[in-house]
Amino acid sequence: MTQEGGLKKHMAEGLIADYPHIRIEGEGYSEDWFNLAYWLCSTLQYMTDSYGAPQPTVIKVHERVGGFWFEIECGGQPPTKEQQEIIGLACTLSDYSMIASGRRTLQ
Image (cartoon, rainbow, N blue to C red; front, side):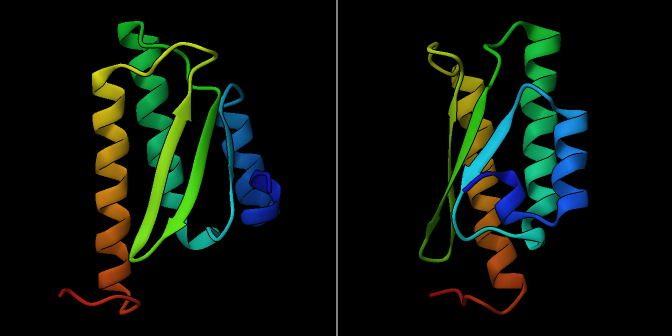
């Protein structure tokens, strides 16, 4: 599923306009996750523009118990350690979002 299938059209178009080099793919995420997706694109693009990190081309979103798991593709290059840490932070934020919304509880 492409960005357009998971997010409302105007949200998907906003991401595409602001981050034309990054495509988001995945099942199970929707407009509820727009702010997190936008933050993730923004942060990863900043790392590319400012520090020369590999350009993310695809962010894959995988639904898992209690949140989402993200992985990035950088046009055949491995993501940097810092990019991997940002992905880990996004996973943690998705967990806390699920808890805050009442869709998941701490165990």
